[in-house]
Image 1 (tube, rainbow, N blue to C red):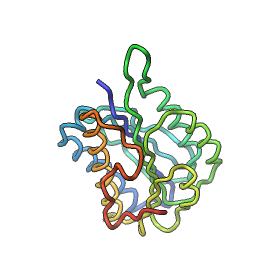
Image 2 (image 1 turned 135 degrees about the horizontal axis):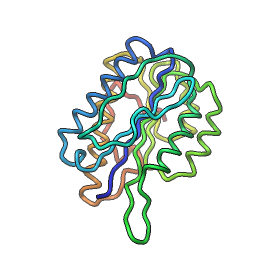
Image 3 (image 1 turned 180 degrees about the vertical axis):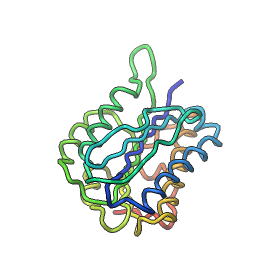
Image 4 (image 1 turned 45 degrees about the horizontal axis):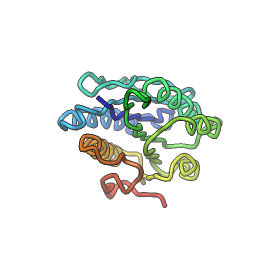
Amino acid sequence: MRRLPVYLLLDVSGSMSGEPIEAVKTGVQTLVSTLRQDPYALETAYLSVITFNTSAQQVAPLTELATFQTPNICASGTTSLGEALGLLADCVEAEVGKTTAEVKGDWKPLIFIMTDGVPTDDWQKGLEKLKKVRTGVIVACAAGQGADTSVLKHITEVVVQLDTADSSTIKAFFKWVSASVSTGSQKVDQGQKEVSGLGDLPPPPPEVNVVL
């Protein structure tokens, strides 16, 4: 069975404390419960969560939806986005099945990055490492006005911005993420082409602004 790996890279720096981090936690829980109701996603989607503040850590390895447990997330520290990108590259390398002459590997991972600030480490170094592994579409979300969309634009063409990092906006973002994963799972199931850009994803809700 070819899996559709989904990686969430979540900023848990100090500026996310309070309402934003609670909204992110709820968002992840809602994402999982929504996808569990989707037969395509339940069969193919596997989810991993990487958090980053002063350092980056994979708090949930790539897990099937049926057994996925939302990790406990709390906000503190700075914004080591570069370290998170490097860690993502390591996780993709270790967890995503490669296609060989004998077997078809997993589908290219869908990656969703959410940050509310400016990286405090060498993000270019992490990005160089990430570019060496095979990924599918990467969606970067700038939550609120403090996030630097120009840095995110270097990471991926698909950058969206939330005007505020409050619970209703973050909820809308996660709802869109779950719709995007559902779409990806369905394409996989029907043997269509993989999701390769924004055009293959469902249209974002009004709270989620595409940065051109």
